[in-house]
Length: 125
Figure 1 (cartoon, rainbow, N blue to C red):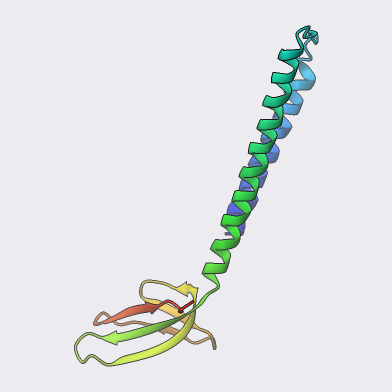
Figure 2 (cartoon, rainbow, N blue to C red):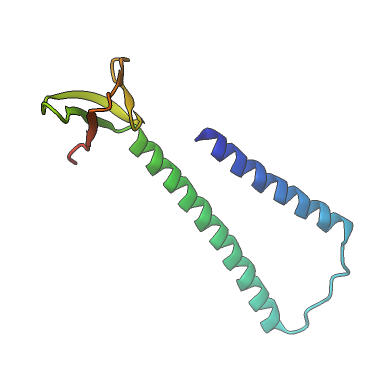
Protein backbone atom coordinates (compact mmCIF):
# COMPACT_ATOMS: atom_id res chain seq x y z
CA UNK A 1 0.00 0.00 0.00
CA UNK A 2 2.77 2.41 0.92
CA UNK A 3 4.51 1.69 -2.39
CA UNK A 4 1.38 2.80 -4.28
CA UNK A 5 1.34 6.06 -2.36
CA UNK A 6 5.06 6.67 -2.87
CA UNK A 7 4.79 5.85 -6.58
CA UNK A 8 1.90 8.29 -6.99
CA UNK A 9 3.81 11.04 -5.19
CA UNK A 10 6.90 10.34 -7.33
CA UNK A 11 4.86 10.63 -10.54
CA UNK A 12 3.30 13.92 -9.39
CA UNK A 13 6.71 15.35 -8.44
CA UNK A 14 8.16 14.20 -11.77
CA UNK A 15 5.36 15.87 -13.73
CA UNK A 16 5.75 19.10 -11.80
CA UNK A 17 9.51 19.01 -12.35
CA UNK A 18 9.06 18.48 -16.11
CA UNK A 19 6.53 21.31 -16.33
CA UNK A 20 8.78 23.72 -14.47
CA UNK A 21 11.76 22.76 -16.65
CA UNK A 22 9.72 23.25 -19.80
CA UNK A 23 8.46 26.59 -18.53
CA UNK A 24 12.03 27.77 -17.87
CA UNK A 25 13.16 26.83 -21.40
CA UNK A 26 10.39 28.48 -23.32
CA UNK A 27 9.61 31.69 -21.52
CA UNK A 28 7.19 33.42 -23.84
CA UNK A 29 6.91 37.13 -24.04
CA UNK A 30 4.07 38.10 -21.77
CA UNK A 31 1.28 39.81 -23.57
CA UNK A 32 -0.70 42.41 -21.77
CA UNK A 33 -4.39 41.73 -21.54
CA UNK A 34 -6.04 45.04 -22.09
CA UNK A 35 -9.56 43.96 -21.32
CA UNK A 36 -10.35 43.80 -17.56
CA UNK A 37 -12.98 41.13 -18.21
CA UNK A 38 -10.34 38.85 -19.72
CA UNK A 39 -8.12 39.42 -16.67
CA UNK A 40 -11.02 38.60 -14.35
CA UNK A 41 -11.89 35.46 -16.35
CA UNK A 42 -8.26 34.30 -16.30
CA UNK A 43 -8.08 34.87 -12.55
CA UNK A 44 -11.29 32.89 -11.99
CA UNK A 45 -10.03 29.99 -14.12
CA UNK A 46 -6.74 29.88 -12.24
CA UNK A 47 -8.56 29.97 -8.90
CA UNK A 48 -10.91 27.21 -10.06
CA UNK A 49 -7.99 25.05 -11.17
CA UNK A 50 -6.27 25.43 -7.79
CA UNK A 51 -9.53 24.69 -5.96
CA UNK A 52 -10.05 21.54 -8.08
CA UNK A 53 -6.49 20.35 -7.34
CA UNK A 54 -7.01 20.95 -3.62
CA UNK A 55 -10.31 19.05 -3.73
CA UNK A 56 -8.63 16.09 -5.47
CA UNK A 57 -5.83 16.01 -2.88
CA UNK A 58 -8.32 16.09 -0.01
CA UNK A 59 -10.39 13.33 -1.65
CA UNK A 60 -7.29 11.15 -2.12
CA UNK A 61 -6.24 11.62 1.51
CA UNK A 62 -9.75 10.74 2.72
CA UNK A 63 -9.90 7.63 0.52
CA UNK A 64 -6.49 6.41 1.71
CA UNK A 65 -7.44 7.04 5.35
CA UNK A 66 -10.76 5.20 5.03
CA UNK A 67 -9.10 2.24 3.31
CA UNK A 68 -6.40 2.01 5.98
CA UNK A 69 -9.05 2.22 8.70
CA UNK A 70 -11.06 -0.55 7.03
CA UNK A 71 -8.03 -2.82 6.57
CA UNK A 72 -7.11 -2.53 10.27
CA UNK A 73 -10.61 -3.45 11.45
CA UNK A 74 -10.81 -6.51 13.69
CA UNK A 75 -13.24 -9.09 12.26
CA UNK A 76 -14.50 -12.46 13.44
CA UNK A 77 -13.42 -15.26 11.12
CA UNK A 78 -15.41 -18.51 11.20
CA UNK A 79 -13.84 -21.69 9.80
CA UNK A 80 -16.70 -24.04 8.89
CA UNK A 81 -16.24 -27.71 8.04
CA UNK A 82 -18.71 -28.33 5.20
CA UNK A 83 -19.07 -32.07 5.96
CA UNK A 84 -19.63 -32.02 9.70
CA UNK A 85 -20.83 -28.45 10.17
CA UNK A 86 -18.27 -27.82 12.92
CA UNK A 87 -17.53 -24.16 13.35
CA UNK A 88 -14.46 -22.55 14.96
CA UNK A 89 -14.23 -18.77 15.42
CA UNK A 90 -11.12 -16.58 15.49
CA UNK A 91 -10.36 -12.86 15.71
CA UNK A 92 -8.17 -11.35 12.97
CA UNK A 93 -7.49 -8.10 11.19
CA UNK A 94 -9.21 -7.77 7.81
CA UNK A 95 -5.89 -7.25 6.02
CA UNK A 96 -4.56 -10.57 7.38
CA UNK A 97 -7.36 -12.68 5.88
CA UNK A 98 -6.67 -14.37 2.53
CA UNK A 99 -8.80 -16.86 0.62
CA UNK A 100 -7.35 -19.99 2.27
CA UNK A 101 -5.51 -18.72 5.36
CA UNK A 102 -5.35 -15.93 7.91
CA UNK A 103 -3.31 -14.74 10.87
CA UNK A 104 -5.10 -14.30 14.20
CA UNK A 105 -4.62 -11.37 16.57
CA UNK A 106 -2.36 -13.48 18.79
CA UNK A 107 -0.11 -14.37 15.85
CA UNK A 108 -1.28 -17.88 14.93
CA UNK A 109 -1.34 -18.70 11.22
CA UNK A 110 -4.49 -20.68 10.35
CA UNK A 111 -4.87 -22.56 7.06
CA UNK A 112 -8.19 -23.92 5.86
CA UNK A 113 -8.53 -27.36 4.30
CA UNK A 114 -10.29 -28.07 1.03
CA UNK A 115 -13.46 -29.15 2.83
CA UNK A 116 -13.55 -26.03 5.01
CA UNK A 117 -14.74 -22.57 4.16
CA UNK A 118 -13.87 -19.24 5.73
CA UNK A 119 -16.64 -16.82 6.70
CA UNK A 120 -15.86 -13.26 7.73
CA UNK A 121 -18.23 -11.53 10.12
CA UNK A 122 -17.90 -7.76 10.03
CA UNK A 123 -18.17 -5.88 13.33
CA UNK A 124 -21.48 -4.22 14.12
CA UNK A 125 -21.15 -0.43 14.22
